[in-house]
Length: 101
Image (cartoon, rainbow, N blue to C red; front, side, top):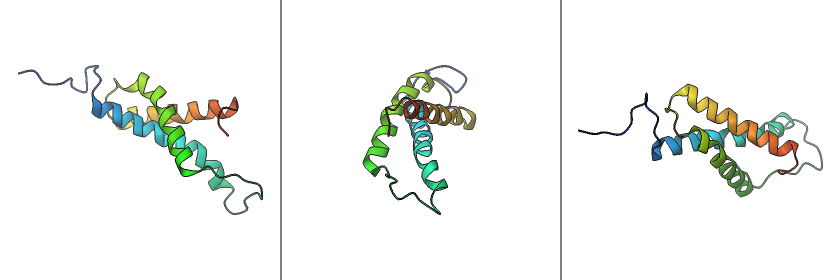
């Protein structure tokens, strides 16, 4: 009887794709929100908070790039942290180059 690939084998399944996509999206959202949390006690007067739909939409699109590389990894805490950190890093890179506000 054939079953799907185990965690030890490489193989892309929708559950793995979704798990790594969510983890990567979390990393991207964390990158966008941490500076705002750090300034929360004394926010700047001209601080522009991202709209919720812009935040979720950009994180979802950026996460697609991460999932291309990580969808074949098993769904373990270590691999999900790699996806979250890759989403964080890609978002930071886009902020450095001025693609994201």
